[in-house]
Amino acid sequence: MKVLVATTTTQGDRDDDFSHTVDGELVFDAGQCDRVAQDDSWDCECSLSFAGVASGELTTTAVVVDLPMDIKQFMRAFRDGLARTNICRECAAVYAHRARICALQWPIGTIIERDRDVIQERLPVG
Image 1: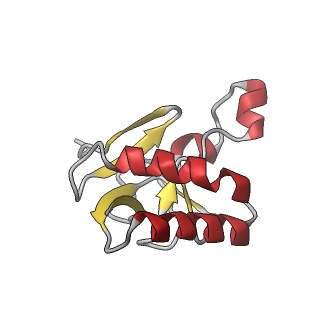
Image 2: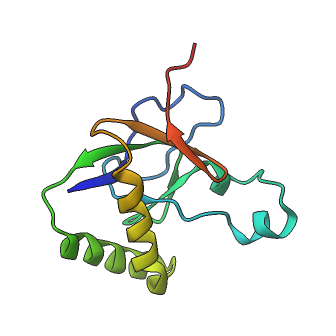
């Protein structure tokens, strides 16, 4: 099944890169945080990152991979992971659905990045 996972590949290509996730963990776009929503400044790490399902941490890079799991296992991973990290267990289905739709947009092996509301393929710097 095509999914998004955290990757350290291309980390450091951008000045604002960071990765606090576990390499290979499922990730999703959690959207903007409350602070960004309130003052529209977009100067928070949340505006550049994906959140890790298992760790609850953030990363600026994700890669599309094909994992040997079915949709029930995928949904359970989101539900259990978000419950453990206290992100939003009730949001698990929405986040999982968005992550799955996002992963389907690119071929396996594509590294993606997020800039505010735009998720795009990460192109080489230079």
